[in-house]
Length: 77
Image 1 (tube, one colour):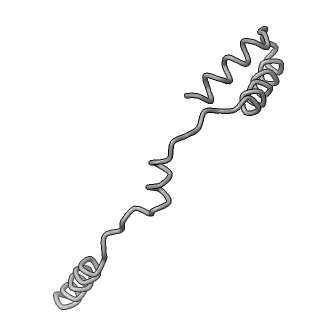
Image 2 (cartoon, helix red, strand yellow):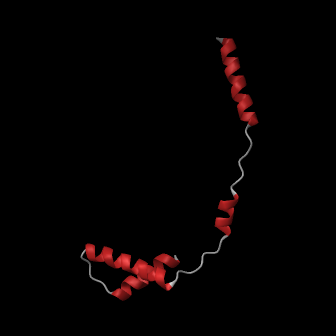
Image 3 (cartoon, one colour):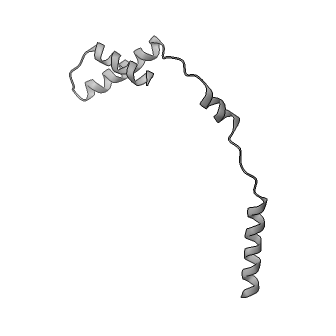
């Protein structure tokens, strides 16, 4: 039993030794460095429409202006 344990340990060491560190992909690096442009009027309008639809489904009161301002806050972060 002692000989099989040493073989297993030897294999584990050799595979761990052969692994190379993984560098982050260039796509992730570029994405993190990219500057996000502010949302356009169409994007805000679409988000405000989504907010309106959800609000109506929940039978909540509100205004189009409230929906627009909330959409801007959500999109601009």
